[in-house]
Length: 270
Length: 257
Image (cartoon, rainbow over all chains, first blue to last red):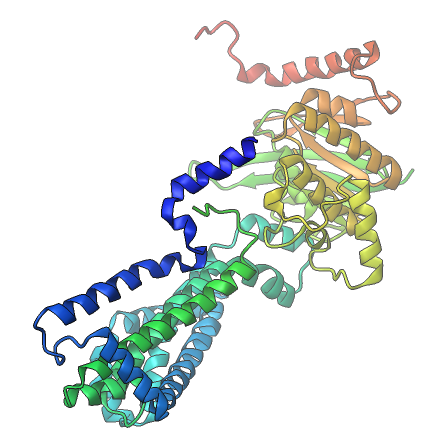
């Protein structure tokens, strides 16, 4: 009886929200925005070059899907971003581990890395073009540089915040160096490392667009740049939405890993 | 019985900005195999420091600490250590915490872990995470974890200090149980008088400034001991009177507050 009352109360509190499946709650606001957008572009006298209606964007999306262009571009962009991200984040993880574990490495390396970190990445574009041209290598390297720092900084921070008390336990049990790394330091630093990975995924995406806009013959960034030149604003929107959706999916991927690997954490969950 | 742990002329000083502080002064102690020793003293008497030195966690001392004929020069699995906090790895389940760097895939470890979980009465919680355990349960996991390594001596640094009275009494029973089954040598630091008399075959009373052993009180009561028995109370008073002598210089009687 009392349980029923409780359930009812919960329903009343959530109101109309309870009628919609929980995973969709986050999509309510984007949906409302799209509806308003459609209304504004239908009623208002705004030219399609300034603000194409969602329907024309969807139509453009369908056309680009049909002729295969879109998925080819998405594939190329994702491949680029993934290469740069993997290169940068693995380097960030390894260098972060070595500066985190070794005082000597920290002393000799950290100052230089911090100096490089303060340089706005985008100001390096002219140099990258000068040195590496506008080919694939140059793009991947730029993405990698962007992806490097979040993972590096957070790995270092994660290692340095390992509880000294647990470290004492591992000394008593005579952990080998390898065990210390795999069974003690990495699990303890994992929350920070995953946070770094998440940030670095976002940056990879950001740098990808810049790299593709500065000169490319394929990819979603190129598609946007090209469409802008021909005032095909609806294609620009298709590109932007693709970035948003793929970015969201990659972020969800890391959040899934966080849920899976960090469920042991005893933290406030809202 | 044979002497298993010999501490001879042990001195330890801490460097402080105001000059060196003597933490331990000329400590002499011999512990027989299988003996249960409790060490009691006010805070600052160096009892925890002494335990850390025996554990090999602190090697900056003069004098000799010899375990099984070998000088102690670092931590090792022969010297199990139970801290005041359980210090479990939060990302591991109870059984994996007990195994720690040993593999549960190894059948001997597997069997031993199951046995130990039974011994510390945690059956059913093998797959729980530390955040799901109460303080007493977590401390029992820590005890099982230390016992899995078959230590020659178990060093306990106020292990039940942070627990409530009921849990503490229960864990004292558990510990005595384990001691009687395994005959592990125990060195138990506490600031609880009852606990020291209840558990120890000998109570070492320590005095601060500088930390040294004031006296040693043998407790010749059979186990299980009854706290309410007159002989227990008598010995408790005996230790307490020593303890009060210890406290004397630090308490200003009649100073008024």
